[in-house]
Image (cartoon, rainbow, N blue to C red):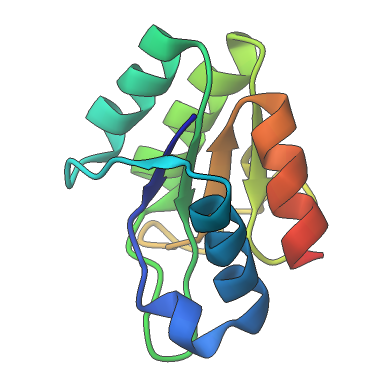
Length: 123
């Protein structure tokens, strides 16, 4: 199973997220990080499994913009049968109300099973 963790620093401030990372490491998930959301999500599609996760914290702010990056890729993932989740509450990233053009959010997206595991740990 592949996962991408674009904001590992957030695990220092967020105990629940840190516990999820420990779970991934203990269960020998393969770590993948290209530095880009699109190549990592493409890899999930190519392998038909995996998770893309970018969680923020007080010190490690969210970097991905809802309008330009998160919502479009979330739509593609959900249309392909996967699932997406907001980092702040258990809802699809497509249900996050846009506050302004530069609204940045943390997220998880990928296979339904992996996003369910994210939800189990964070909520």
